[in-house]
Length: 167
Image 1: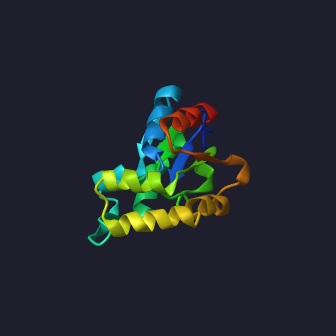
Image 2 (image 1 turned 90 degrees about the vertical axis):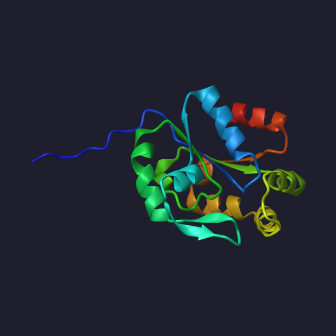
């Protein structure tokens, strides 16, 4: 009779989360370079591997299939050494992460960044409202132990550099 054991991770997993436009991708890329951990952009996985249930034209986004995404990511996360970049955090199992970084930014910064990406006005408004109402930080607090949550301001490149050092 064989007993299956789970090998403990030897490298940490980090979640970089926040409202769109707070600098998640840039910060995750900078962390990847400075730590040697591998960046996973969950939104790219959703698109590239069809981990969705169609497309929402009104908000110009894919409709996430959480089960498909989690099933796809489970073996990656078990290895350890990953930096996950995603705008939400409450869908991921708590056991996956050793650190959850919630990035925050000024509403003007978010507006400028999202407008620069060509986001529709309704999508920009929805994301700014999420930032105003602390949606992502509240999700993090409800989903993870407070000891592993780090809330960081991300308005400027200098702040992003400082954030990488802090992480």
